[in-house]
Every structure is written in C-alpha cells, then in structure tokens.
Length: 455
Image 1 (cartoon, helix red, strand yellow):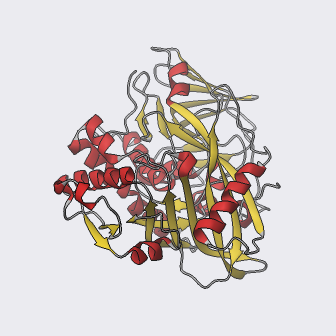
Image 2 (cartoon, helix red, strand yellow):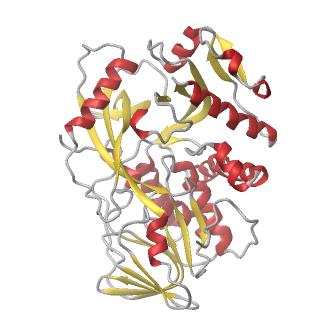
Image 3 (tube, rainbow, N blue to C red):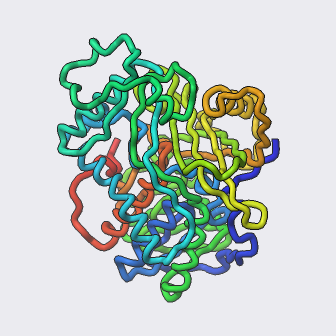
C-alpha cells in the first residue's frame, strides 16, 4: 500500500530548506528537528541567551513527529505502580506532575508563537477487557491518590463477576455503572469491554506545530538560531569542555549537544574525557515501528481519543492486543472539513542491528488488522465502505525503563538527552524541552526519574 501521512500532507511543501555548508562554532547544538528538538530550541532561546543551531538529518518533523498518531496525553505507558516500586512514591509523583506540566508548556509555546493551528482537548478514554488490567489501573490510581493527586473516576460495569475480588483499599476509586455507560464512552457495542478509564487527552498535528514554531523562532531569534536540514550527524566526539560533531563535509564545535533523535540512528558517540558511552547509549533505546491508517468521515462527532486494551497485561505495552483511535477535524480538498479517523496498533520491535526504512511498504497484514478492528470495534459494521486515504508508519523510541531520558549524560555533561517517546511522546517532549533549558541556564534541579543514570 502507498504511504501517505495526513500530518505531512498539511505542511508547506514549498518551504525553503537550508543545508549546513560551512564549519560552525556555537554554544548549543540540538540534533533532531522533531517535536523534542523544536521544544528544546524554543525554551533554550527563550530562557537563555545562548546561540542555538538545530541539525536534522532529513526534513523538519518528517521523522516520528510526522508519522505518529497525534495523541496528546500525559501518562506513562509503563504502569505507574511499577514506577512507584522502583523510585518510591515521592519521586514517582514528582515525575507524574512533571509530565502533566507539559500541557502548560504547550499553552506557553502556543501563546508566545501566536499559533492558530488546530489543537483539540477533551476527556478521552481507555477501555479494558481483562480483570488484570482493571486491577493494575486501580493500583495506579491508588498510588496517585496516596501521593496527593486527583484521580479520574474509573468506571466498571455492573455486569462483571469480580466486584467482590477488588481490594477494599480501592473503594472510592471506581464507580459501578450499567454496561451501556461503558460502551457509550468507548463508542462501541462490543460487550467484552467491561471497564473504562477517563483521562485528559487531545489531538494535534505535531509536524504542523513544529513548522509554525520554527517560523516563529527564525523570525524572532534570527541573530542566534539556525536550522540546517539534510545534515546528518555521523559522529559526536565529546571532549572535556566541548564537543565535535561530524556532519558530513563540515564540522560543528559546540559547548553543549542535545540529542533529540529516536536514539538509535547510528550516531557514533566517542567520549574522549571519560568512560565509553557509545554502546550504553544505543542499548538505552530500542525502536518500535508502528503502523497507522486513516479515513475521512462526516463532521458530525466531536474530537476524541480512545485506547482499546484487549490483552491481559496491566499496561498499554501489550502491543499485540492494543489499538488506539483518534477522531479530529481535518481540512481536506480545498479547505473542506471532515473528521479524520486515525487508528494504530500493529507494529514490530526493530532489531537492534537494523536500520529503519522510512519508505518501507505498508504490510497488508497490518492494514487488515486495523481494518478488522475498525469494523469490529469502532464502526461495528463489517460492511461499511471505507476508503483509506492515509496509511503510514513511524519509528518510536522506547527506553528500556519505559521512562523518557531528559538531562545530562553522567559520563560527560557536555551531552544531554531529550528522547524516548515511549508511545506517548508529544507532551513529555515539551516538558523535556523546558527542563533542558533549565539545565542550560545553570539551574539546580532536584534528582528526577528522568535523569540518565550510570549503568
């Protein structure tokens, strides 16, 4: 099937592209011009006086940022109760509050840059089939409430036979409702779904967001900001007080380097002033290739985002039994408005030795899985004619810990990270960009679950 991303479709196809054509000596180099790199540039330029260049191996926002599901969410795909067990309640709660602050930073960028692109916000849902998932979600809510956070009321169908098995400490964290209430929120007639969790969610075209923020940065910080595309960084040599970046026929000297790539794109790291970090870096992140399809519907329903978790793991990393759907306004055919229905779920873990091919074919099996899901769960109509205008895939970076890496490399603090999408990367990327700017400004920050660690 032909590849076509609905997000790249809306970009300015005539935007001028500038390649790096000379050696440079700058204060800050950001590698990767997706949502993480653009956010890091925005906050660094706003809150410091440093000169910044942004290097992109391809084109602005044409990586994962232009090939995602457009979800806005501020939760961890890793069960929160596991994060509590690893880091303790206080640090886990601080981490959750940090990710939640990404919504505030989205507003800040939107306001400062005077953006008028569409961003939809609403209460979305996650639907559950298995009792094990219900228990895991309730346990997550229990710890959030214990840490002083507000929790959205979890809904469980009155028809289930496990109500007496729910631990007493979870009383007050859920409400028993008629099955119809569950199915209405999940927009399905599939009675296998016996519970649902509300959460703040949203949708936006993060590629278009990056394009418009970039225009703002070029206009307002022209004296200390530049973007260079089609400029692949092959090697980074870390010295005691600076870094050398091999960018093809040119070299960039920088006081600080921020990696905002997926983390496994064959950038060779050489630390000449301490312990080797090359192997460790590439083992921190692994790639997951996700497949998505989209079609247009009449503009007769409000925006939404719903996850359907059919497996029995307690989190949203059970990729073989997890589909996600979003519906949002989409301009198409000379500004005619429709609802765009986007669905994803199928995918595979990229072999550590493999290189992701952005132009690889969209497998028929993945499309068939998505189509069957739509007809069985969302449309509940196996005979509806669906014209899939969009099919695309994207490479997501997953950290082994399931937690984004944000901060200084402990083996050489010249290098910083804002990477690891972990399936829900837009809002965490914005928080990461703000934290990067605080580090570069010399602020003393408390120890965080996001800090890169020695291994």
